Image (cartoon, rainbow over all chains, first blue to last red; front, side, top):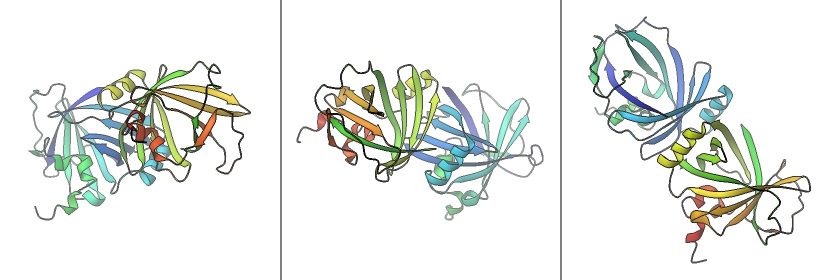
Length: 157
Length: 157
């Protein structure tokens, strides 16, 4: 098992574009209960299944296994909840930290967020100037939430 | 993916005992939704994660992956629903078919069932004399049900 400690921010402006070519992600959830999620992901030509425990602040237990690409595609197409999450992930190294910028498509088009993984929950980090509000603890931005209540339906806000 | 076609029977009598030494299984469910289940299993010294689709009659899509034993133990101990399913599985070859006899412990103690996997849903099979009622389509005997409403609580029947 790993413990994931990460922070998530909204992305503002275009300063991050062109820093990585990006990989297409397509993912969905088989089931979720009490914050425990079972996710299937196709990332480029790779398939994965990932189990995450309930969040405890910004920490979360995570178990990830590579699975055959064709299995992952079948699981997404036949068993995962709708809508699927579709996004392009850009991996950007900035001042010794890896920022993962997710530009969403489909039901979540218009949303761009950036995640950074920390080694310690109290770690101080410098923010690139294209980083906006910290949404780490806002459950609407959890990918599992975006699969149930996608960004394009957030009309009233 | 595989498609599972199997029939499940109650076991009567003791004629099956001594035909295999048995392996201890400990398993639990991470989540289930609309008949889709995500199961973690420790079988002897091996760990597995298994995704099954909803049953269609006695057929069911199944995806199984080996995972590290320690991950499987952690997932069972920390994330899976209670009670866990505990059983000893005996693999018995009888007239060219493999019978898997599950003798349950813990919350399901007293229950013994036998499953046989078929190549075809209409296949005719000979039954050993320790085979009782066909419970293939009785949802109470699904392992996922036994984890929610275990056999020892079936008092009123």
